[in-house]
Image 1 (spheres, rainbow, N blue to C red):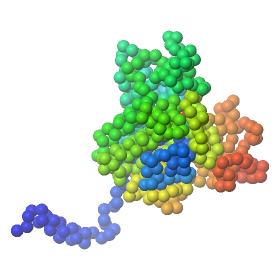
Image 2: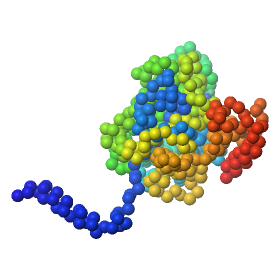
Image 3: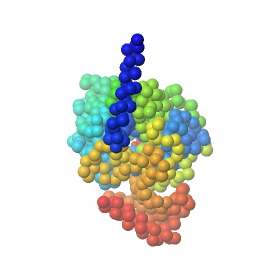
Image 4: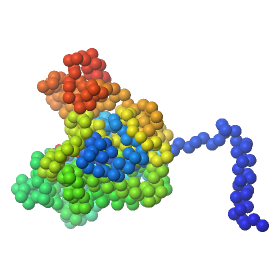
Length: 509
Ligand code: NG6
Ligand code: CA
């Protein structure tokens, strides 16, 4: 006699070929669109030259290098602006931030910049049945009206634009208040010690100016208001003492909270926006990373960022999700050394080149501002290699909608192109042919290997441009001059004209 399981095996092996025999190839069930989990890891202020997989020799980033070893490394991956708020705004909304006034660097008391009901990458994935969360830095405002209701419901916020869950650093680590927000509430807030945030010193408290000699990290410009954790910040606040975090613990929090969230949602497809504060100032990584690089606190923060990426990948390994998960790594803007604190970034720089071969960095419209690390990994689907395709963080909204075959609401994501095939490393997949690079005072437009830079006229809200010592416009030839060292506008007036017209067209679209 056959044991029961052998009979089952026998029956299956006899009947399956019979079933398939009657299914002509055309009538096989259509292949389901792949619905991987999606994790976007966005670093803060990380430059093209800051990672060993991008050629850094003075620092080792083995975990981010693992993404390169197991996926695609983009040589021409961009964020859409060279500061945080506009890049994050356009990553979520698929729209260049310069189209919406008020999307420059958000102050401590900024209210929500993206209105409820606005389609976002998160809302589209949510519509597609994904569980969605953002964990880490937000910096896109919370609440409505005059200012956020720090002691009440911080609404609207991520949960009103497509995220099922958020666990946030509300603005930046150098802007007050130093608290976490869990969905709509400040975590651990004691109602008897209300949190107040504002622009003037409420109670004559010590500041970075009056108590400079007590600081554990000195400031170099700005950053001399409320002191918390021995570091003076941008803005004033009082109260909320039980809710305040230590800078040194932020990375651990993003990692542990994400691991728990992934574990709880592992059976559904999920979208996680892992938004590390590293390597934004004040660079005060956990004690276990301090003095571990030779580049000072900035390098130590890169090590902490790399560790966080490693922990996210380890969580995927542990839960057997690695092959089911598309991981995208990017940065919100290019690098800066002294961004307001004396942290050794300048004095301990040595041979390190944060922008790689590029000119400029954070705030700038040269390539160093927006051409930043960009990697994709999805083992078994994305081949290992390097890509020359031009892709931009603003494209992720449309490309992810395409990946999960979710229709995009009409008129949504106007600047977001479908570069999915490039992101998936398909051979010869086209990326963009042009991309706008939004600096704080200038706009860059790259078209093919040509690059136009124009400084915006502050007097009329940047609608026209103003002359610099280089003239009204600058033109560079990136294939011959990646470092944008020689303005060739006199030699190629026609090319310049073409790009000027194109920039105008994009701006008025
Ligand atoms: C600037 C801050 C800088 C940083 C930046 C925002 C000063 C002098 N400088 O205004 O330290 O916080 O804003 O950075 O205060 S971002 O990456 O979030 O855009
Ligand atoms: Ca940033």
